[in-house]
Length: 85
Image (cartoon, rainbow, N blue to C red):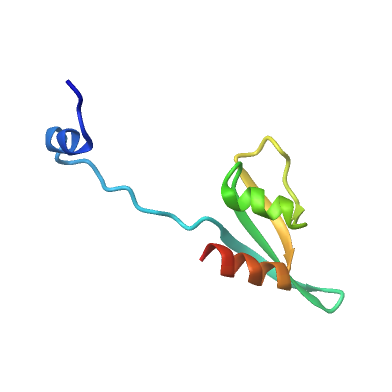
């Protein structure tokens, strides 16, 4: 006997729906040497995390942390917004 998601929800009517969260969060921004930089956080191992590593973002946390923080130039931040929002 296979149990489907519909069967499980009928057995547990008071369960909460899963809400989709944002793939990243903007933490801060500041001007460095006349250029605008942004700090964002994302979950370690996520698609955003992998994309940021490939595209030259500066990681400012340790590798073992579950939340990763990156510094991005304004241009890279705009690309991130276009790609993931």
